[in-house]
Image 1 (spheres, rainbow over the protein chains, first blue to last red):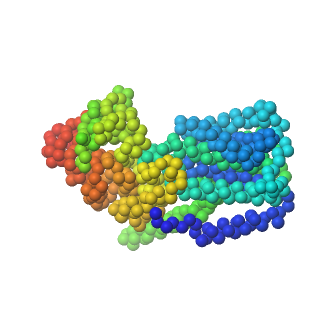
Image 2: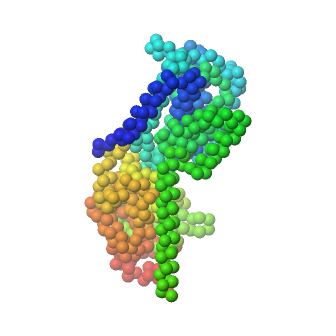
Image 3: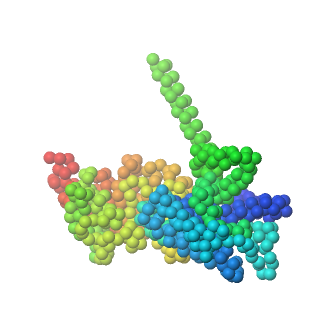
Amino acid sequence: MKNVKLLSTQHMVFLGLALGALLLAPSMLKTYGLYLLSLWLVYVIAAMGLNLTVGYAGLKSLCHAGFMGVGAYTVAIMMKAGISFWIASPVAIVICFVLGLAIGFPALRVQLHYLGFATLGFNLLLVLFFRNEEWLTGGTFGIQNIKRPGFFGMTLESNTSFYFLVLAVTIVFGVLLALLLRSPWGRAFAALRDNPIRAESTGVNITAYTLMSFAIGAAYAGIAGALFAPLVNFIEPAPFGISNSLLFLMMVVIGGSGRFYGPVLGAAIALLLPEYLRFLKDWYLAVFGFTAVAMMIWLPGGLLSMKEAWQLSQAKRAAKQKQIAEAAASAGVKGAAA
Amino acid sequence: MSILSVHDIKKSYGAIQAVGGVSFEVEPGEILGVIGPNGSGKTTLFNSILGQIKPDTGRVEFEGKDISGGSPLELSRLGIGRTFQNLQVFGKLSLRDNLILAAQEHTGTFWGRMFAPPDNGLADRAQEMLDLFRLNHVADLPAGSLSYGQQKLVDIAMAFMPKPRLVLLDEPCAGVNPSLVDGLRELLVELNRKQGGSFVVIEHNMDFIMKLCHRVVCMVEGKVLAVGKPEEIQGNRAVLEAYLGN
């Protein structure tokens, strides 16, 4: 294999600065700010998983919040039963992975919006389960007083220490996803998205990659849920409903579907923009919605496609000007000939 | 032993019989041409052999093994490559990635590829194909941004990437600039000589097929009208009538 550089210098500088800012953030933020930053990181993990399913593998999934709920409830129930967070969270990941495999099977039969509806139905089922199985999930009352874990004798009870745990998990899972996408699997996922017929004729096992894209995406939602439960200390069915599945999809699409940093930016916008728009009072959701619609009209490839969209518009403008100049020159030649 | 044996393939769409009992064999190292007017059932026959559609009856054998009803995935794993009549490249991936993708699933195991290096050890092979097809200058551009002719070459190069023992090429000259057709023919001859393997080529360009192929099958209305060496087919009155009319 040729010596391929993992990251460009520019990329490494950017990552170093971002990491520095994230490490320094707790010293500059108050309680609510730190909570929002932790929540953003949790959403980034979940959206990274959805980006794998939707953005890289090109499959429609509208049950991501449901998977996150499974992760959150698994950890909450197990911790209430006295089982350590460090055992409960891998169990949450495995359960979500298996559920992801199960929901991947309809994707082998149906595609596009039909698949979207199938996954939407699955999310609805999960919410009904969270709501109705009171003996296990606490029903609409939810599960309260979920404690934050300890780590080798240290308590992660404080907002700052828990934030650092969430940050570490985000980095680990981000690196794992980057390595996965860089491996031949990443190329196979892209093939599945771009041209499944051709992919199969080149030996890509469509069935296996479809199932794995759902399963790994769900596993990411599972770990996000596992962190969400101790972060908010109280869980109930509402945050894991269809509206939040749509919110996760919006994070992926607004940031840039199929782009590694798309969910990072998308989660920041979906979570933080409404906070900054709160001064608009009753109008803030309307303005947020309008902003999202406007983005989809002018930047359908997401915010990270801005540079390419600008280059494309410049190229189109140059081509149009060239066409006008050629038409004018041609008219001039004809006029002179007449 | 023949590398490919097609026995009595039939395929109908309602009352229309697209392929009506076609049989032929392809020998190791042979380049076999399949010609016929539009609607003679060539592509349906190809798709039946390659598992893209299920024939009504008939049997296909590859190296003596019955592969009838095998999926495109299974046939690819067995060492059968194909190109498509319409462009079928992965537009967002670079040309180099398209080539690596075309062979990566033939190396290692499914789980092993999860931890494999990005090129799965195929960088040198991809470079070899880029050199052979003279596509080095566009190797790192998205395949979708290339010209039609270049994408056609990518499609062909992809079919040969995993060193298949049999390649079925569906109209390789369609949409290619006539000045490049001779170059494409020489390329296929070179691949046949260097890499070995057998080719089955569907094509409307008679000059291309007659100069390239060792034998030619002529199909008309879903049936084999004539089989023979190019010069025999060129002199066959029934073939000429099928193409030119009485």
